[in-house]
Amino acid sequence: MTSRLFEEPEIGLVAHNSVSRQMAVDDSLAHWIQYLSNTVMPTAAKHVEATVQWPNSRQVNNTAHNIAFNHDVAYFDYVSQDASRAIEFARTMQAVSNTDSFDNCHLVKSLDWSSLGEALVVDVRSHMPMECLLYKLTATRWVDPLGMPLSPWRKSTQI
Image (cartoon, rainbow, N blue to C red; front, side, top):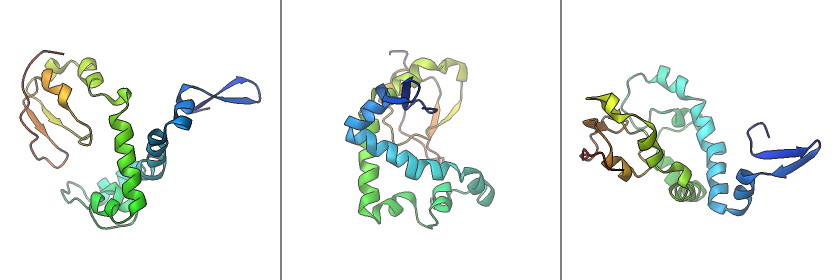
């Protein structure tokens, strides 16, 4: 209830709310929440340690995930070593791509892109399709977290 996953309509009575109800009936959402709990949160807890241990590293195996799960391979190599991890990841990506709440158009509409001017924008959510950004961006240089250029973006104000 403190995370707003359930509600307490009266003292001592726990009930579903719209979020927990959806979790109970949508398998892909349940997998996504499992992924957040089992993978994302332990990884997030190791971000500072990874930054201290590997400052400025561009190596794909110098990450918070490597520390959290005590391995020395790239993330997708790690995921592919275990069928259950691969399935959990695939179902998570399916849930995220099928959920309007994660539509990138929210980002496009909520940020004053023109205020960035000639900015460098790093796409740290590279697992998410960024099509709707093609119609709004004024920033001129886009890179992924490793500094690799992303495909050219059109400049437009259509949305």
